[in-house]
Length: 142
Image 1 (cartoon, rainbow, N blue to C red):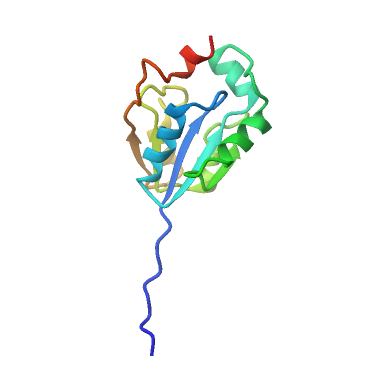
Image 2: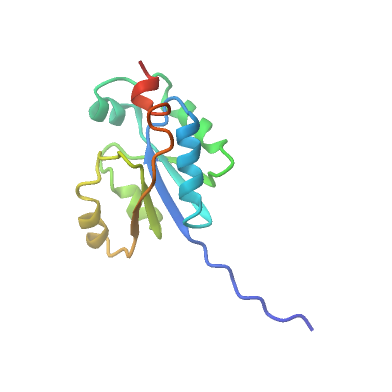
């Protein structure tokens, strides 16, 4: 008779970004985040959100960026964020862990407050940079 195997708990990890030009820094970001759980959800910013936050139109449209992210081996699920309520996707997916980039600041100032408001016990982890002098979107987009 086969012994009952315990069910594996899904540990959802969530990250956010524009991912306009995917580069090795992004790939490392996904890989670092995936080590914190077993299901990586990547929220890709909408074109209008990037324009609001970074004051420029992305080079690639949101659906192209979404597809490129979804094709990354470490990524289990890629979704577009919301324009109206940037935190709504967190409430819907209810991640166990949110990983932030080492220099990520957009929409992070209210993150802890929103997690409490949503009654989520989500841990927030700041990831390490990966050769930021070489692989930083703001430097590569020039």
